[in-house]
Length: 125
Image (cartoon, rainbow, N blue to C red):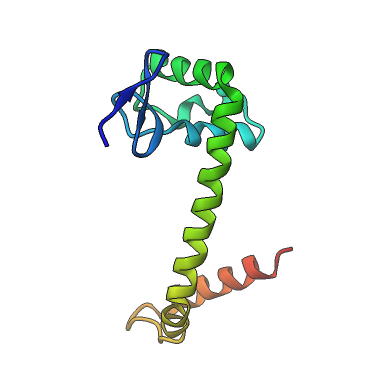
């Protein structure tokens, strides 16, 4: 699908959804930060590859079209979760096999540290 310019300069619609023109950055990536409670100023540094003008255009577009962007964002989040669950199920047996493998020769100490760290993370609520 070809890119179709949107009403606001700097934001276009592609097969990936709403993106910052000239990049692969979607507005849904911005929405992740906004949903996490961040202000635009607090997450600007996560997008060093875009200009201030592109960043401002994305934030302005989201603010001006919040309902539309929010609805699309919810669809993207749902589809991503379904995809994650599908691949997790597809790879469950393989992950179990990998988990049973012995440490690589000469890396037993590092392997033990890694396993201890995984156990600590798993035990946290």
